[in-house]
Structure formats: C-alpha cells, structure tokens
Image (cartoon, rainbow, N blue to C red; front, side):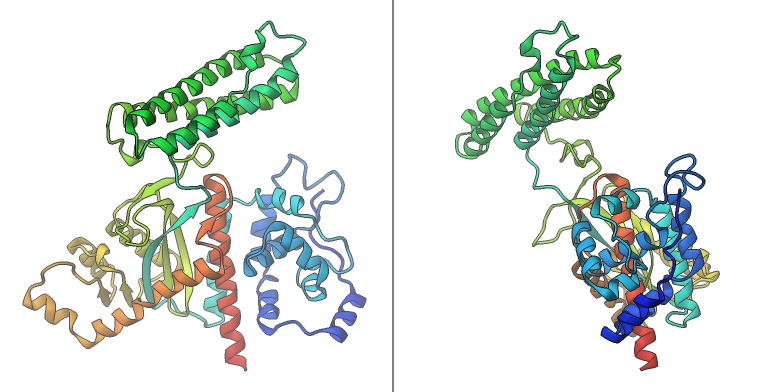
Length: 461
C-alpha cells in the first residue's frame, strides 16, 4: 500500500539540532519541497504502480522519502548507490529526506520508484517550481533567453564492426540461456544455440586493425563478421519460434529480448552492406549508432572540439533570476530557428503574458521570427542577423539597449555550462527515451531548486 510519510520523530530532530545545523540553502530547498502540489504530482505517478497500490499490500517506502532522496541524488551528483550511502551516514540528510531513525531505502528501491515518474510529470513539477520562484520574487518572467546544447547518451563512439559484435554478443548470450529453458522440449539441433560472441569479437578486432591501412583485407574481415552476424540472426529466428508459445515466464523474457534485438541486428547488417561494400553515404537519420540506445541521434554543430556528437539536442528557456523554465528534447538535428516560436508559446502559457525582452543567437534569426515576437507584444526582440547587414540593420543592432541585451543573453552559455558541470547534463546515464527525458528534467529541477534557495538565502542574509 502506498505510504505518504514516516511519522515525524521529535527525538531525532532534537539530536540533530544539538549535533549539526542544516546548511541554509539545503534548509530552503527543504521548505520548497514541503509544497503540497509538488508532492501530489509525484504521488500520482507512484499510485499507478499496480492497480491497487493505494489500497492494499504492505506499506511502501514513503513517497516523501523517495522524492527527497531523488532530489539529493541530483543536487550532489551522486549515483543511486552513493545516494543511499550518503543519506544513511548523515543526520542532516536523514532529516532532509524525512527518514529519521527508519531504514534508508536501498539503491534498487530508488531505481524502481524513479522509473515510475513520467517526463510530463517532471515538466509539470518544474512549472510549479517556477511558480514558487515567482511567488518568492526570484523571477518576474520579464526577460527570456533561449539556446540549445547537446546532451550525450552513454555510448562509445560507434563503428559498424563494434555494432555487429555487440549484436552477436547480446543475441548469442540469449541463445545460451534459451538452450537451458528449451533443453527438454526442443527438437532443434545443438548448433542452433551456438554462441558466436568470441568469433565476432575476434573478427571485429581484425576489422579495426586492418580497415585503415589494408582496406581490402579489412573488407574481407568485414564480410566474415557480417556472415557471423547473419548466422546468429538466423539461429535466433529459429529459437524465437520455439519460445513463442512456451509457458515458462523466463522463456517469454528471452523471447522479448530476441524480438527487440533481431531487428536492430538486421539494421546494422544492412547499413554495413551499404556503407562498406556499396560505398554509399548512409544518411544520419537512417543509421543506428547503438543497439542499446537506438534513440541516439548523430548531431553535427560545427564545433571544432567535437565535430560529431551522439545524443539529443536539448533546448532550454531561461528567464531573469536564472530560472530554467522549460527544456525540450528534440528529435534529430532540427534548425535552431524552429525553436523560437515554441519558446514564446511556452513562456506565454506559464506566465500569462509575453516577455518584455526575448533573445537568442544568430542561428535563430529570421524575419518571420522577429515579426512574430513583435506581433505577440515583445518590446525588445534581440535576434542578431547573420551575414552581411545593411546600414540600417547595423545601426539597429548598435543601439545601446540591443547591445546591453546581447550581453545579458551571453549568460545563457554559462547557465548551460553549470547544468552540465554541476547537474550531470553533459551525459545521460539513464536508458531509453523516457529515461533521457527524466535525466534532463531532474537536472533542471535540481538546478532551479538550488538557484531559488541561494537567492532567497542571499537576500535574507
């Protein structure tokens, strides 16, 4: 049964106050998280874990404890295991997380509950945090600056040879497990269950060693690796047919694994044939760069240090006061100028009025975007025009208010840097598209909670 809170422990609070005082910023975050609307958003997701989660069963880990421990995880850049350890060993964090003298939830419990929180819930959570920032006069929503960056997925730099070897490894491992489940019922020959992982791994290393200096020898190794992969796929399809109607729950889990990875392996074989043997330039949107994180996009932004990035382009909207009001995880590598109107729409919906000043980089400029912002009532539209400019345009962009606004806009780069360095938005360690969105969402929320709290504490001090 879903449990809301542990009963408040008066003796624990007395002991903590005598031993150590809570950091003022953490104490302010503690007050923010007492907001009932924030709590109910998370509780509603947790209540859908099972059909009767709210009514029956043993008491769950309290919702309040999970919410606060997930906040601690992101605030301090911890793993789930590290969060469990830090909360268990700290009286202050036990108080902050409302654990008191009770057992601290372990890392696997945190993971299971965290996966129930939907990305849409975190967006609503952040909207409520922004409302709290407005009520505390941390922001008034008068200025908007918007920009994008790339958050990478947790994969290594892709190569077709490694993708083929990974496909054989995952499918081969599943075939070995299927052999144990089907040993008494199957009529399939023993070689159908053969695991080709070792051969694939050895051949992949040959490819990587030969393909640059001895191209033909490298292609021959590639052909061998493709044949190993195709043979493994053929074996998997035969075993899949046997698993389809097997009653054992483990057989159904193995079936699901094969259903997931066989098409991905086939796609890798196809793109290898096109790229290596047909010398075709495969478009980025038709490539698969990871058989585990298939949602990963190939993004080229013209950066010298990182010409190619693997992940998702994420667009951030920030208002005065340093509050990030919205994030959008984009598909592929769309043009920056397409993000201007959605940012204005989101600001209007959140604050009920357009910003007085809105700014973005040169890549967002277009006559339509500039006119659209003016039509909506934005008084100062700051979109520098790229390329050659007329004398009138040069004079317009040299106005003192435009230059001042450009200097303020430059701060969005620093905000993105803080999100990446301090709140783990440089690389997503969660899996899947929803996991990616959750990772970005928690990073933004933790940043906003800390920013609001530090502003309130500095003002009161």
